[in-house]
Image 1 (spheres, rainbow, N blue to C red):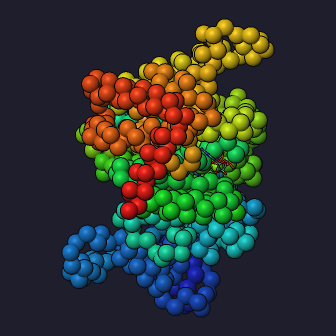
Image 2: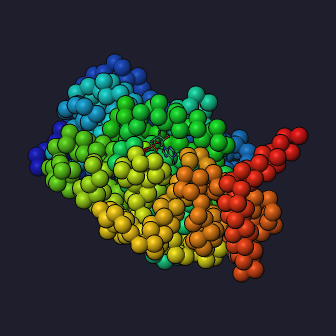
Length: 599
Ligand code: ATP
Ligand code: MG
């Protein structure tokens, strides 16, 4: 404590001078508390109407009327309102209330800069504790030194001036959580920013908690369908898994996350989209798109925009995770998207540099790995004893010119269970989603796929790998033998079939039908430019004919051999018909059906 070295002084403030008797009692109290004789000095303060205020070093003992009323107020606020009737409860609290001499630590802001403040005093404050400045602005302690502490500030730091008094709160940062957050847009502090009014919360959760341990987890074994053919077939994501989406700017990273959220419609998965450092207009657009596709009602958007304080951008993903944990701990399945963690690391770097922590590689502070590891470790598939809930994380990282070996990308790659690597070249050549099949991976893999999907997607990855190799080899040779040519055409066809528009997730049965038809070479003779048209026609036709098989596939994810043979035979027949009348008949048939539907 600060008063160990030299004798501290005690200052007493009150309206009237204390009697000899009172002074003696106070001095005895000081000697008892600090185990030394402390001289007491009285200052008259007419502002204090009843009682007194005693300050010793950075400790404050408040026995003013105001102080006692405040204590009482705080006590009332702490009442557990789970009891049915509040009247007896209030009566009990009032009866039992005994004001005590509370010790309170206070400090003083000695420097206020961009979004940070340095505070002297507060010898007992803890890392991560929330402190309160004189005018109600809150800060969080992020840097502990021998003689001062560094805080990041929430809200407008123009309101905090050097010399202002700082108080400890004894709490770490928390977040209101609850079911009524669904469908809402909130900031990193849990306050609504969508103009739809206040949100009633069910509980408070600290934004930083330890991740579930090994025994609390069970293996990832249930799929979280993205509805994106290329991902569900080759890089399946399981509930509780962490799959990184990585790529340069404007390669469709956000699109994959949003499509996955839309695909959770009617699947009973709660989605949380955490936007970090984006433009407010982009976040508004995302909210509008989710609403338009009926996905906002099961989604919570937590947004810390580029214009918000860096401290809010820094805590946003932890706050979003606290929301997710609230649902996971009650046995629900949660999907959480962090868009994106590169900007999160940059916000943290800015704060660290302002707090004068020493910069390391790429000017990030030394603990930047821990920044993301402690965040992503909180995603889990909980054991049955803990309710069996899950939280699946889709962190997003933006690379510069495809450089995955930069500091932050390598960190996050090593923390996650796989990555979906998006490439600008593919994106600009029209291959969207622009997934690089060679560099993407899901380390959970087949364990998180339905049987039907595993059965039907079997050789897709290998076929595409062979195609890529052959493509590279044959790039410069002009005359190719028939077999090679056929393989190239087949590979190009597969790549074309993996193209998928935004906001159009495939259902399970559509993916299975498509994979069976494609991987059994039934589409080989369809001209590549007709393939997408053919895909739609084939799916519509088979869906209409075998509705019961489709329903079974969607419901239990199993594919009987008999059904598979049936689908394959029909796919072959459809191709033959299509080729026979140049696509015209099939299309005409479809138009008739549409017309029927309208009538
Ligand atoms: P940023 O780096 O700006 O965050 P991003 O990588 O998140 O970009 P998106 O915003 O998802 O990329 O997508 C970029 C553009 O590409 C958007 O206009 C989007 O509509 C379009 N796009 C993304 N995916 C597809 C797709 N599968 N089909 C067609 N267009 C797409
Ligand atoms: Mg984006």
